[in-house]
Amino acid sequence: MLKQLSSTLRAARAIGLRITSPRRRLLCDMPPGLYDYWSRTARFEFQGIPSDAFFYARAADALLVFFECVERSNRPCALPSKAADSVWHAWLRYSPASLDDFCERHFGRRIPHVEAADMGGGMMLPMAMSLVTARALDDLALAGPYVPSLFATDHALRMPDGFAWQARGNSVIFSPMNRRGRPADTAQAHPAAEPDFLLAAGLIAQEDYDQWLQRCRQHEGNGTFASVVHGAGDACDPATAGCDSSDGGSSCGSGCGGGCGGGGCGS
Image 1 (cartoon, one colour):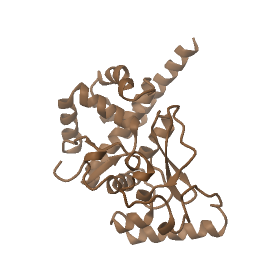
Image 2: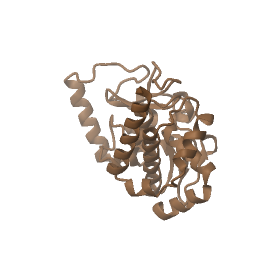
Image 3: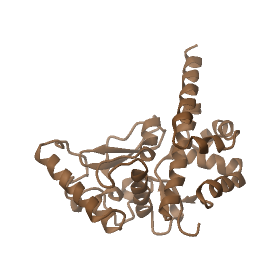
Image 4: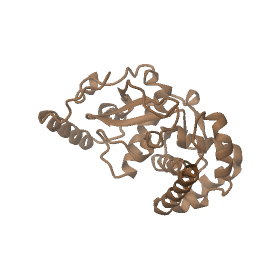
């Protein structure tokens, strides 16, 4: 009885998400049989993943946000969500031709799925590109401790073995999640989210950086950010913050928090 009620509530939430999402037209245009296929097969690749309608709807919506990031940036982007990736993988198996057609119609191009190991130049810049573009889509400041909905997907859904991106102090921190969908105890400020890196990469303007620095100093002055994040260093001194990025960010876990990427010029 309780299980049936829970399933009914999740189905209702899925309908609500589809109705209220800015991407509702795109969600309705996804293959009708994809959910059933995903619910049957995703668990073989992503152990412990839920198979309910709401989880799928939220993950599918996140995948569409990622595709929009690729379209808007016209540069390689990294996917920060395993939940969204589960839908992408299922679609590739279910009907790759319909996926290509969908992307060409709605995003003007095919968006190839590229594993992290095959992303030329590593995942750091593609992850930063995704972060800045997703922030812009959510009307968030481009620099600072702001986690856009795409990056919050796995944590919100408690995705087993997913990626937890959270705001902590004046930084965005990253930690891998366990099989029960809980973030690891240790967390680090992610180098791809640090304003110094974003500025140096040309992904934010000097004005964005200066506004972040001003907010950061104000918060430090009134003691708002008194907590210390393991490995984060000084939140307002990115030169000392976060992981060592010399190896492309692999010390942050799972290819800097993303298992695959896609897009870019000419894709």
